[in-house]
Amino acid sequence: MSWSMLHTMIRVGHLDRSIDFYTRLLGMKLLRRQDYPEGRFTLAFVGYGGEADHTVVELTHNWDTGSYDLGTGFGHLALGVPDIYGACETLAANGAKITRPPGPMKHGSTVIAFVEDPDGYKIELIERKG
View 1 (cartoon, helix red, strand yellow):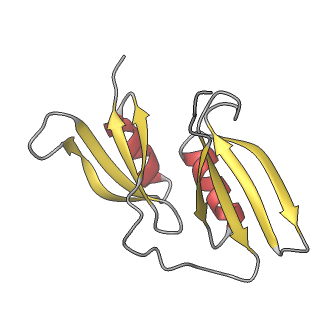
View 2 (cartoon, rainbow, N blue to C red):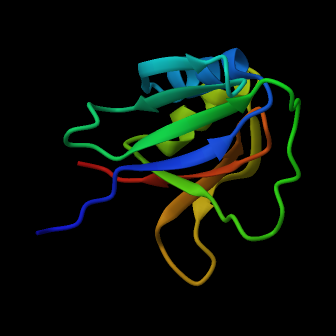
């Protein structure tokens, strides 16, 4: 039996705002969304491809919680992009917070940037040409 990465889950304070960020700004697709009224939560899965062959992000919205303390344990999600400068321009023009502008990594040559989602989660953009 081989293991595979299925999804990463993050808790979000405002589900529609988060779905908009991940789909409209980061180009993911909303794969599925399910309300659980008895548990007072909603799960939404977003990603660049279907769950059968791609790792996706699970957005968990607990109806009675408007925001979360991000803590210090979570680092970031990472996305490969073909044009990091253009991606950051588009993100910033749409109101996204770029917390580290694009440029070479310290002590390296890989070009990276960081953006925050609406709940403050960090997303690293890594330029991957070709």
